[in-house]
Image 1 (cartoon, one colour):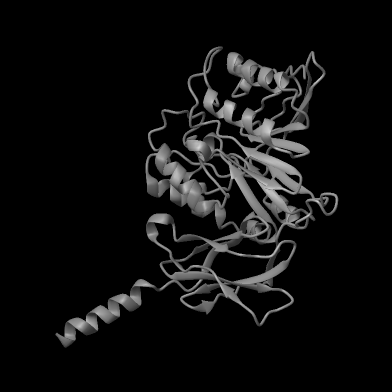
Image 2 (cartoon, one colour; image 1 turned 30 degrees about the vertical axis):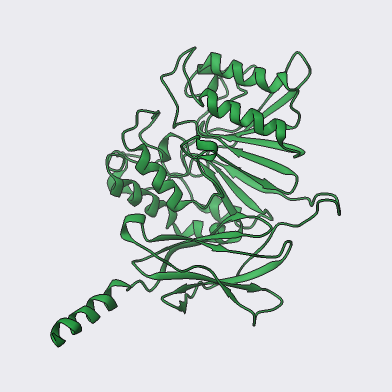
Amino acid sequence: MKYLFSLLIVLIGCSLNAQNISSGPMLGYNTMREVAVWVQLDGQAEVALSYWDAEDPQNKERSESLTTSRRHGYTATLIAEMLEPGTEYNYEILINGKAADSGDTLGFKTQTLWHWRTDPPEFSFLAGSCMYINEPEYDRPGKPYGRSYSLLESMATEDAEFMVWLGDNTYFREVDWNSRSGLYHRYTHTRAVPELQGLLKKMHHYAIWDDHDYGPNDSDETYWLKDQALEAFKDFWANPNVGVNNQGGITGSFIWNDCHFFLLDNRWNRGRPGKEGLLLGKEQIDWVIKSLRYTQASLKFICVGGQVISDLDKFENHAVYKEERKYLLEQLDKYNLQGVVFLSGDRHSSEISKLVTEDGDVFYDITSSPLTSGSYDHKDEENNN
């Protein structure tokens, strides 16, 4: 019996053997009371978040401890709770009870309680799509599709509060999208790129997906591993909510000061292209319209993988789905919704589209793409908006 007991001690000791952070930490969602911090370890371990008011370092709080697992890519999303608004905090990652060496002083500031007190605070944020990280043995032969990653380091120097990732935030390859382990390998490989680490720590991050970080190229509702892709998305991003109001997929929203951001899913319900095809689905459109009518925000940003305001009836633009796009724009116009801006990606080129309705309502679509993937010359395309 004593030999069995000794063996159990050895096995338990070896089961929690992670020593290092392999990616991150990354700041996730931010509110007045809670902030999420994501981290990926190099193995299984107990991980927790220690955090404290930057002006009171002796009074430390600790998050709930989680045990990382292989099934979830050794990731963990840790929540700092019961914070004070407008307060600067420092934090550290605890691995098996010991503080991990991040090499930096880590911190965040909660959102400010400005309502009924002051004008809403000014802020800036970043938005972009299409981040391809090369892995030569699994990439197409020839010239690498991923370009310089120095842009990611430049982004980390910006004085911005958060980043909105507009889809194609990683690129599943043929070797990835037929297995759960393939999906997790691709996320892990992308997230670990050294040039990205400073950006992950610097500001908060919110995300949607498009085809390449959902499944195969141009994938739709029939993708056979969509449930596993959703699980991977939730393991690698720290959005405040996912699949709100039983929408399924990644649909969600968040508020930053006097601005409301809606994170739409253009894959989960996507049918075949065509005049009467569905891209977002009526339930998701009705939800966002009701939400836009309810919110008191000055500006409303609708984040979606593909272009909406562009009337170019090609590729994966919403204009390919004529009836659904018409319904969406009619609903926006019907309720005279003001201050609506679409943020989109996908196109490997950037432009701003503007639509003025017969009633005088104005809607913009800012397409920001690409980050590190190949670019596309779209100057000969006819976008009347």
